[in-house]
Length: 244
Image 1 (tube, helix red, strand yellow):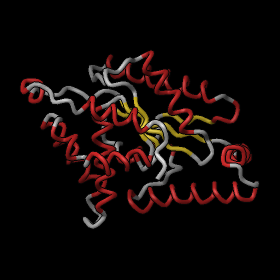
Image 2 (image 1 turned 180 degrees about the vertical axis):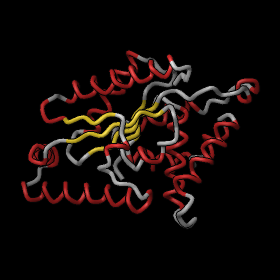
Image 3 (image 1 turned 90 degrees about the vertical axis):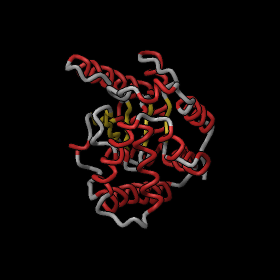
Image 4 (image 1 turned 180 degrees about the horizontal axis):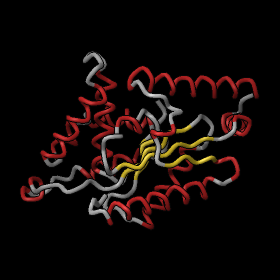
């Protein structure tokens, strides 16, 4: 499993978040978790590049004590493996927040057999991270898993097929036929994952607050567009008295 150079940043986020609070802080009522973002994407959209730039943008415009941090599929699984998530996280979360996560788990996975242990643990980890806030969750059904959490903003990235083929050919050093096969396999896998485990359609636009076509804008501009939308959305929640 490749987790890339951002593993250290993710583990630093976990260590920061799980620093034991005082007994008073641990049991005081929780008003609202900090904002989080989910990113669903078509293969070859440059989602990880955009997510990284989005984290940098938000850290400047909306600074987070533990830093805005990106978690993709592999990083979530690596955190599970090395830190026994979600047990470690739950120890340092207010009881009302843990109960809320339990409720969401029942809603999104209640109809599935308990034997799907990895799915349940991964989903619970995603919920814990999203509830703690200041995370950008890429893939792994995070948009559907967190749809009941009011502090999460959902994004879908799309790009025309030919442009995605070119990007995959360049990035992965593949011939055109190989790049096309890779894209079809990745897109089909993601579509099946949501359908099989959450009974959801990945192309359902109602799952997302914002859809961004990256065909004619740079990754930096896409990240800025998403970041501005997140901040505007957060401001509207604050105006309604529902701080995120």
